[in-house]
Image 1: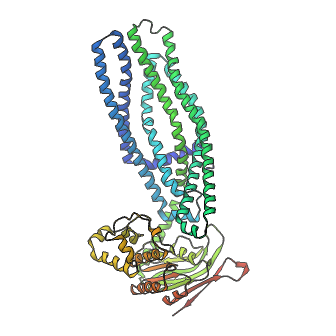
Image 2 (image 1 turned 90 degrees about the vertical axis):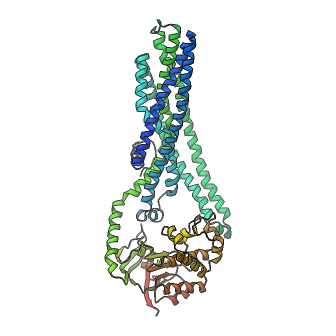
Image 3 (image 1 turned 45 degrees about the horizontal axis):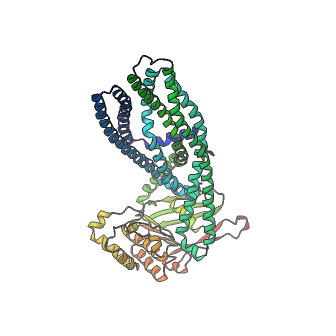
Length: 598
C-alpha cells in the first residue's frame, strides 16, 4: 500500500476502481438526466448573458418597445433558470445518494463475506478504523464528488462552445489567453492539492482514532468507574484529540496557500478578460460601430470571455473539493484493495467447505470429526495444541476445561473455522455457518443497541415478522421462554409489541446475567442440532444454569461447553482438560486429556 496519499497516479487508479463500483444502470440514467438538465441550464445562462447587451442597445436607442420586449424575455429566462437550477440541484443530490448506495453496498458485501470483518479487525489487525472508512469517508467522498459532477459533465461541451464564440468575436487572442491562464494556474494547483490531500487523509485517520476512544469509554464506562480509570481515560482522550488538532492545524496552513491561489485565480480571471478585450478594441476593430451597437457588442464580448474564464476558474475551484476527494479516495481505495485481494482464494475455499458439508449430510448422527489437528496463533509460529482428536455426534455433551490462557477458546475458533488448523483435518458433516444447525453463544452476548425484542431473539437470523404476526404459537413460545428464564420484568417493560423498536440501549439497560439469558432464549427458539457455549453461563446463577442445561437435554441439543465452573461437569458426559505443558522447551504448548465422566 501507498505510504503517501497525494494527488498522483495511485489516486487516479483508486478513483477508477471506485468509479467502477459506483457506476451502474441507475446512476447512468440519473447522470444522463443531469447532463440534459445541465445543457438546458447552460443554454438559458447564455441567453441571460446576452440580455445585458440588448438592454444597453435598447436604452442607447431609446427604443421603448425593444426595452419591454427584452424585459419580458428576461423575466421568462429568469423564471426558467430558477426552475432548471432547482431541478439540477435535486438530481445532483440523487446522484450522491445513488453513488453512496452502490459504494456502501459493495463494501458491506465484501466486508461481511467469508469472515473478512473478523480477519481485518482481529487477525490482521488492520491499521485504521474500518467503520469510519465505510461510513463517514464514503459519505464525504460521494458528497464532494457529486458537488462538482455537474461541472465535469458539461465542461466538454461549454468550453468548446464559448471558445468558438470568443474566437469569432475577438479572434485567436481570446481563447489562447484563457487557455494559457488555465495551464499556469493548474500546474501550481497540482502541487498544492497533493500537499493538502495527504493531510486530509491523516485528518480522517485522526478523527477515527479520537471517535473510537469515546466509543471505548461509552462501552466500558462502568468498568472504568469501578477501577477509577477516569484520569487515564481523560489523558488518553486528550492525547488523541491533541494529535487530531495538530493535524488540523497543519492542514489549514496548507489550505491557506491553496485557497489563496484559488481566490487569486478567480479575481485574476475578471481582469484578464478585460485585458483580452482591450486588444481588438484598441486596435480599431470596432471603430465603425455606432455607440449603441458598440455598447451591445462590448457587453456580449465581455460576457463570452468572462464566462470562458469562469469555466476555467471553476475547474480551478474544484481543487478544494479534490483535496477531500483525494484523501477519502485513498482511504476507500485501500479498503477495496484489501477486501478484493484474496477473494478468489476465499471463494474456492468456501466452495470446498460447502462440498464437505453436503457430502456428510447422509451421516445424520455424526456432526464433526477433528483428526490430528494442530493449532497455532494466526500470524505467529506459536503452537497452542498438537494432534487434537475429537469426534462430535448428536449425543455429544463435551466440556472443555482448564486454566485461563490454555487455548480453550482457540479450539472453538478452529472448530467454527474462523481460525485455520495448522495440521490435520476437520470433517464437518453439518453446516457450522447455519444457526439452525450449530449456534455459538459467547460469554458476552451480541445485543443490538437500538432494536426490537423480535430482532434480538432472531439474531443471527433475520426476524420473521410475518410469522410473528400470524402465528400465535410462536408469540406464546417467546413469552414462555422469557418467563422460563426469569425475564418477565423485561417483558413487562416492552409490552405487547415485540416487533417495536425500543428507544433505549439494550446493552446499558440489561445486566450481564440478563444478557446471557437473552442469548439462551435465542438458543431455544432456534433449536439447533448443536450448541457451543463459551463461558455462556458465567453470569448466571447455578440454579438457572441447571434449568438451561436440562432444557438443552430435553430438546436433544448436542452440547460443547467451555468453562471453569465445577458445576458444569454434572451436565456433560466427557471433559477435555487442557493445561500448560511442563516441558520448558515447549512452554507455549498446551497438553490435553479426554476423560469420560459417565
